Length: 213
Image (cartoon, rainbow, N blue to C red; front, side, top):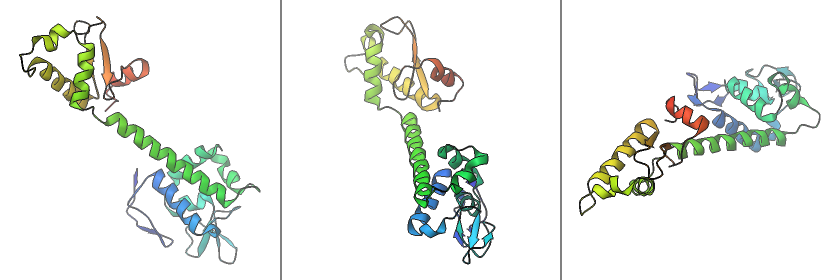
């Protein structure tokens, strides 16, 4: 996310906080409303067709590069280049290719928006805590019964509940927790995340580095 103090650029309202998602979405929306606001072979043009700078007060049509510049969002251009499959240095050529159309620009921006939304959804899912009941059932399935519910009182409100609350606290604060070799009914200790998935390999390394939060 990028922050800017300016809210206007060449008559365009700019959010105080910019992400590649809202930049790409804004470009796609503008071009869907007004396809003639896209050009090629230069950053921008005036109404008479003359080339000009992207932030020129008389500019009325822009290349993909120009659209990001007028939004003070060059960082988004770099990511759009990557999504187009063209190296950054060649992305202006991608925009200017004879077969390129405004529909291609819109499709590229929409593809970036969908990818960003999916990334946000994946992150939200990774950060979501399990329900208490779900975590309890998970632990019951992996703990030795004699040291989980086996030491509870008749109302099953003591040890197993305390263990579950402790594990929930670890998941909330650290992003992962563990069942020790001694506690495991399979006599094999393991780490697990908020999705109640056993951590192995790179994800286990990230957990130990504090990068699952």
